[in-house]
Length: 62
Length: 492
Image (cartoon, rainbow over all chains, first blue to last red; front, side, top):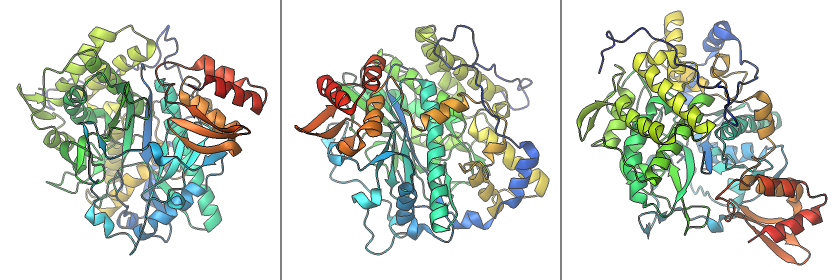
């Protein structure tokens, strides 16, 4: 095993979604991007009510 | 995929002004808020949750004693009104499972169909929450996660059709090591823990809850391998591998990889292969791997300490050797699996656009940096929950640029239309066109009222191969009478 310091420079894994002759496999998507980016994310984060963590008590499921 | 697969998701539920003591009734109300065409009810006669794949029937299933304290005195659960079952035109089932709106996708043969239907389920549950809020004046949110961070867990289960001719022990033997290590890409991340030492952040929402390697229970002292023997198909020919050791995934890529890789491991077992590296204690290993924030993930195996990535590679390498080139979905899974393990080895955060736990960790770190929030604080746990909120106007996940897998049109279509190549296509068509004639409905069949008596449409006989031609024939029936006649002739 490598240590964190020994790791290589991070690279994005190849995106396996689009390949020629994929047949009925996954194809290049044509979708809306969910959006907002980091500004919207920060806005939502700052609106979060910390009390929600205490209130969020759930029944046990499977 | 070469087998039927479906995913059941129990959603967490937040209702303004209501607490856990009201959750049973509010979940039923949320489900009853479904404003889409559906058939009410469910035929429970075919269900046998106490039948054990090891060859016996359990006397009882255990319940969580802590959970009972949250209920109202005299609380009952299990009657038709509280369960509020609905079967949708897309072949899915929506009901109240012990206080959780549960969405079970229709059976799929295509990985991308399954991803589309899983995402369709998020939107349908969100629709229900919106209608409920409008009707009652109480805001409601559905949370696609597996923990309340206070001791309760609820499941996301995968169901895989498998061969009866392969001993259950062969599946269990391979899956114990596979499932305990696949949390590297299945985990959806969790701030904190509720047992053992307290890490700031762990990979899996579910790793805390497993107490046994193998067992029948799902509510208490949960096992990594569930032995429920309820095939929903001919029991002489088929099993259902009911996997409860997985997290709810919001990232579609994680859903596809989770299911695709598991299908390949089941293929390997059915071809007689078994892993050569085995975890000594899978229950302990899944908790340790989940908590290891060095991201080295060492595990105790019968060959000594070995990293979880290398343990996963034994499955990947064998599947690559045997199945590369078999079909596009297999090749996609092999590529995605390899790319993910490589990414985890190099730097897990490079996978934040496709896996849930790195994505959420990125968000929480941003919160820490920007606002001075601390690990373990209520604000951070609240942010953790909001990642999983399926309301696009509140969800933190919805703000991210992530790898989508299926088109918006395909997800929209999946909200009302079933897969066209599985028995779900027949079920959905019946719900759509013969709703008023349905007397009983379940995974394995539908009973229809006709002028000459009850017609039983046996769906158990339609699980072995793609059904495109038969579903198309049924869809093309010009009248309800013609459809009934075709169903009558087609039923075995």
